[in-house]
Image (cartoon, rainbow over all chains, first blue to last red; front, side):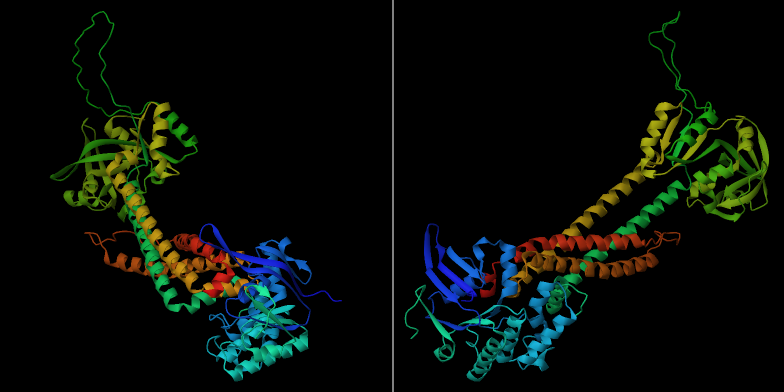
Amino acid sequence: MAEPILALKDVRKSYAVGLSTETEVLHGIDLELESGGFVALVGPSGSGKSTLLNIIGLLDRPTSGELAIAGRKTSELDDAQITHLRGHRIGFVFQSHLLISAFTALENVMMPMVVSRGHVTEAIEARGRHLLDRMGIAQFANNGALNMSGGQQQRVAVARALAMQPDLILADEPTGNLDSKSAEVVFTLMREENARSGTSFLIVTHNMDLARRCDRIITVVDGRIGGSPE
Amino acid sequence: MMRWLSFVWIGALRFLGEGRLQTGFIVGGITIGVAVIVFMSAMLAGLEANFIKRVLTSQAQIQLLPPNQIARPLRNGSSEIEDAIVQRPSQRVISIDQWQAIAHRMEALPAVRAVAASMTGSALAIRGDASRSVSVVGIQPESYLKVVRLSDYIVAGQLRLTSDDILIGTDLARDLGASLGDKIIVSSNGGARRTLTVTALFDLGNKGANQRNTYVALRTAQSLLGVLGGVTEIGLTINNIYDAENIAREIESSNAVEADSWIKTNAQFFTAVQAQKYTNTLIRLFVGLSVAFGIAAVLVVSVIQRSKDIGILRAMGATRGQILRLFLLQGGLLGFAGSLGGSVLGAAALVYWHSMARQADGSELFPLIIEPSLFVATALLATLTGVAAAMAPALRASRLDPVEAIRG
């Protein structure tokens, strides 16, 4: 059996509340995500989805438990190794697209590669244009990131998440701020990329229609995996 | 996107470019600050150079003189007197003892660049009915001009000093009604008289000096003043004019001479120059601090405004070091851009002020000294100030938690 792209074992996360009290928001999460999967993560607001996504995305560390990305145990990595792993293995699509306004659409897509490589190369620019073309927004390459519609911006965000050819893309409510038509376009593009490149997707969504179109639905309720998505 | 630029440069330039208004204001502020520093530094350097030129081109940087003549009462003699009344002796014109040996020793000192012996005494300059009391300075032009740049002050004639020549100031020439080629009689207190030909007129920029000073050949002065073969002064030019006082003290401690440095003989002017320097340093320091605080304030605001961008960049794999450098570079770029504008503005203000500010006689108030090194130093200092000022905001940016930053 192929090694899972993501494996969480008894992952817990607590936050300090006041000086002496701690609140646990994730209560021993066990989860495995197979490589190439297209998985929905659903659950009510405040259930711990975003916290879980931040931990999986290596933006936050669990209080206890083990997280492995592509077989690498993250608890054994220092900050620089975590940053490297995050930059090379994981892509992010945020709810409010979060493009960098100082850059053009193309530059936003190129940025993960530029950060990794240190400077722009011809190959990086070519890949950036190619990704925009795949998202159907090549004509907006030189537009300011914020001079586009919400749907177009989210497509730029998807292209940016794909830039480093990551193993896993984490999408936090990628269609949450979009109209239904744009949401459909963005979802379809992600599905196509999953099929084309084999990149795994973990999509946090409140939209059960979209969730049902994923390969698998994982439900988080009160900081635990399981329960009814409905 | 320019291919040769690194990620840090691209980010810094874009962030500064996007906040145009903010960037414009702070660069404007830095420009004014740097312009003040450039203007003040160049003008004060000019004023100082002018002062030093005026002082040191008409006198040696260190003057070695014969020791004061002191009358000492006899002690333990056969006719000892308990309450001696010692009369202060008059100071005759006497030569420096062993002056040639002293001059050779001075030439051997590494701090000394030039040595010139001269003979000075008072005399009367007479032409027709007019007579004026003058100071006769006997010099050997070839060595004396290395110590006192008399040639810079010649306004008519040629600096030629045979035994029958004399150089006089423009004001003395007017008082005596003398011009080039005219003969004047120089009579010493001892009764010696010489008829000398005026070969050049000089203007030392000081009416008193122009009326009083006259220059003749050393042998002529020795014969007029009755000190054959002697000299009353050995003038020194040294490598660092601000070491003059220390060197003078060292010379005095090991030679039978009195050593006066230009710092001592122009104590008030020197103090004024020093005070001016301290003031300038303080002004530069405070302007530099205001520039630094301005840059820091703008970047602190920028870090807050760009926290989401920082979070995204961190999520995309940007290291803390890259984020730190991105903001440090912004500080450096702000400082550098301001220094360029400030250098141009400061230089323009200096040129304008130089053309407007004149002395009473219409001559320039200060020489226009625009040293490229000043601009290089200013640009370097402003850039470093910008980087230093950016340190706190840059550290803050680099330490931002990506989750918190993205959440805003």
